[in-house]
Length: 375
Image (cartoon, rainbow, N blue to C red; front, side, top):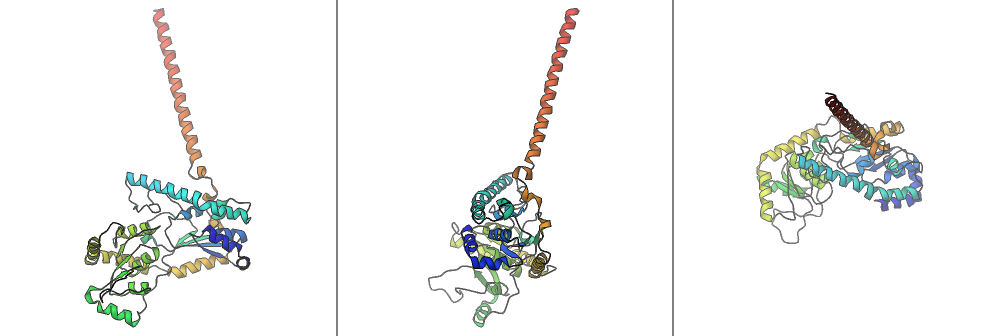
């Protein structure tokens, strides 16, 4: 990501255009927008298409409590046993390490080379954000606290299904009562039967919104998750990268998906899972229930996001919502200095009482010994 950021910073014509902008909108994964916003002192809005657990979210001060918030790529739920909490804290450490030692250093080098905000640390620079817009609603994200500058609006790209072209509509209609299974990223190099259609591209959203679609088999990517949830279609997920694991297991937790491992599952086992999801109506009912939470949102997610962006631009930024935690060192943020003083105080009091007790016992023994001598 830093390599692409350097390409942007080196483009003088692009930099001149950005300098005259009213506001910077960036992707949460692509932290270059923080450097550019800091370079030109522009309001900065981040669009988060994925989970709030992304490592980059450490830059913006998003709370990551591992006691009940499943960490990135942990595939855990928010009901954690003791062993699962140990596993969760392990993933928290990995994410924290990945951010500080994998993501920050390249951007720190860019900050130094291009003399961006020399009076601020790299953490203050990367954390320079006025507004975070998250498109993943809490029906598809475990409940957790968010900061005042974080607005969870809902899916930004999901839309009602459009009519399919005649060829596709005819194929869907011919499926009859059995319906259609949509398989993402399917590849075929052999002759297939007439009830299987392979294409280099298909209107995924429109097919998912068709009443003949019974199941969606995919890798658990966030866009596929959003569209399946919006249209109330059960899923079988085969995650293999990044946030796909968390998306897949959360969908299973919500009751409208099953998760498989393509490295180990056999063809017969996959058929069994397909039959299970299609024949068990609870998957469809759960999917429809999730769909209602999204479709019945009080406001259109896209309109709400646009309103917040326009508001941020109109008032010149929302830095008053920036949390103080972004400026605190690790030991202050997690109360380590206070805990150290508390532990030292308790230890001092304990050892002092122990010392006084031993002195008192010694004096008492001496007094009793002297008393016996007198008698």
